[in-house]
Length: 390
Image (cartoon, rainbow, N blue to C red; front, side, top):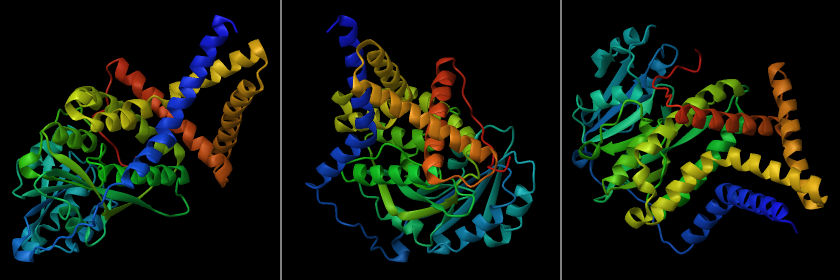
């Protein structure tokens, strides 16, 4: 076997192994480890009079279509009215969002308009200083909470816990992006396993809570729902996941809409991780460093691992005629072909069968990751956000 063949074989083996670890072996290892850990279901036994005060902070930018529904949903939460403060911040909205929020002032809902279109993270920093709650709960305007969501978040707080991440589920409509629903089901599983073994790595903007004393003001270009749990962990506090604190949100109406959102998320995530790179040091953070590396750097690098696997397999097949290498290369080409069919059907607004939709969504997600790392490497970031309808 020539040195070139050996090198190609090594690249193929490593890229396939790392990809398999990121997607399958890591969750399997977490699941195996949790078999040896006892994790009783938490309960919030405090009387209403002993419950902490909560500030529910809702992010809004041009959300006139959903903000009334979100406020009504928040007012119906199973939490004492005198203990719950509802604050909506408007990041310089230009539609009727502010007017609608003000119409609820007589029911205790407060509007904080932030001028200058400064982005969600900077808005959160400012509003966190304006509210009085012992617990800050952050939400998006298009996310509807189940009635007991806040209580279930609070049930996870103990002396060591500084942040609790809730569970985001997607409502099903005829316009659902099924690939997105699969992705979220996968990430929910990983979070449920991670929290049994210490801290979770990632939050989500739909539903997470932070002790006011543990809240860390963040750079404006940081991705708040990712950066805040990391910052809390850096300060020595634990970040837990509450699978029964449920928020519901519709998926975007098309794969292309998801691509735009995922590109923004990938770009901001790389910048955020660079600001918290110290968490990758196992000497300081132990197994949490492995979780962080797997859930971030390795996961976001899978497009390049796929490319390395395909190119090395194609080269090996051309040089040696290896059936195994040919099979790997053919598998990659089949994935692209199925995704192309899914793209064609989606562009025609046709119903896309699951067999073609998932590869399409998968490759769009990987393309977004590539664009995200490219934006990061050239110093570009995306600070503001738009609604799904814009």
